[in-house]
Length: 127
Image 1 (cartoon, helix red, strand yellow):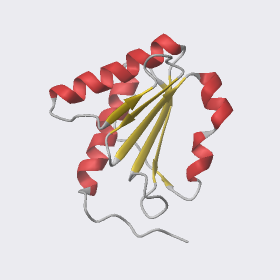
Image 2: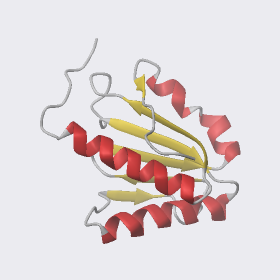
Image 3: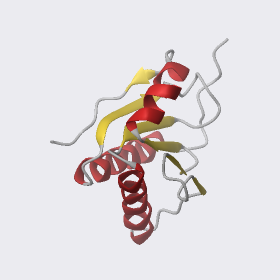
């Protein structure tokens, strides 16, 4: 059963946020950035960004860079989890959920499989 697409958010703003977050991950030397559009598949959010850092300290640094940079632009996280351990940090921007993991955690949990019915998003930035 498909869930109706959300209409209460601006999809263009969410896509722009996804691109900004992906750029920040790339600039922080994060790897294997995966973005999926889950509108109509899940009510959790509209887009999920999954990426990895080399080790827990790198994961935390990527997440901190995203949070601080977006905060300066007036975009606040709704919730942040996992900064203490650093193996898996989640940044919740309501319409966009960001998961930064160590390679071992990413392999263990295979988050991409959760949203197989979603649409993979092409990123609009040059590496």
